[in-house]
Length: 86
Image (cartoon, rainbow, N blue to C red; front, top):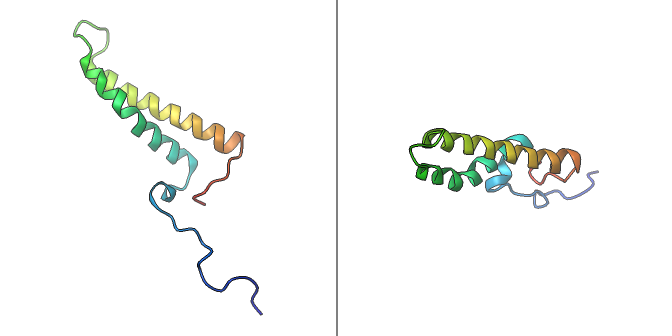
């Protein structure tokens, strides 16, 4: 005898960002995406600055990825927020 529902209607369909399973990949991806608008503004840096525009562009994206990873680490691991994807 089988207990519970026999169809798959109780399962949550995975769409878009829910397909990214692990919290670290999710944090790195969102950090990179949300830092892109700020990174493009680095091309407006004057030529006499200490860093070139290309260096600032990539460093802004890398720092955004680190920031996204830290946010996911704090919310998923330390506060044990439920993962909707898994």
